Length: 84
Length: 156
Image 1 (cartoon, rainbow over the protein chains, first blue to last red):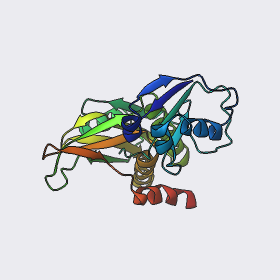
Image 2 (cartoon, one colour; image 1 turned 180 degrees about the vertical axis):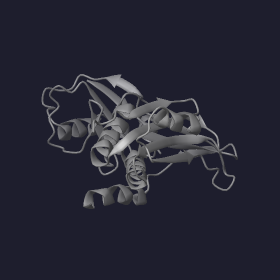
Image 3 (spheres, rainbow over the protein chains, first blue to last red; image 1 turned 120 degrees about the vertical axis):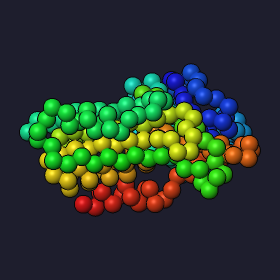
């Protein structure tokens, strides 16, 4: 799955984009966020901000942790948006 | 009445407000009202030298289109356009433009307002400040007032 990061999350992790092999057990958005937290100190610190980190799956906002990752090829992680 | 297709553009270049109005009104006689909103970069009392607008290509256009399609279903519009810039923008320069046209003013006012409220809270753009002092600036924090502004449309 392609994982993309924006704003201070991108800077903090020092990753703009990566291709990741997710473990078989990662089936929902909740699983994906838990897996991110397990990837080391910086990831744990960033993804501890559960109310701040927003997610888009295949370029659509998703906030249901039970949402399935089936068919998802791109996941993006970002703080609340400040456009306009 | 057949529904119009919103014109959504994400670009680094500036836009011309008069030209965008003309695109919605030229050659038609059913429009009685055009409302435009232009968002500009402030210098925050002289402390800012520029804003850097990061965006999520692909999703930025898709998300604004989703919001615009909702506006088209909600109000009897004769035209709707939204342009959002990205990249480095200096104080005084344009950031965003919304143009809504309709037979009567109320629909145009409300649709433009609606589009801006949701664009602020749902369109994937993030602003970083560049300071006039040369020091590294901060990412702009999202405002609760913007969430409240978007929320009020759900109560109608």
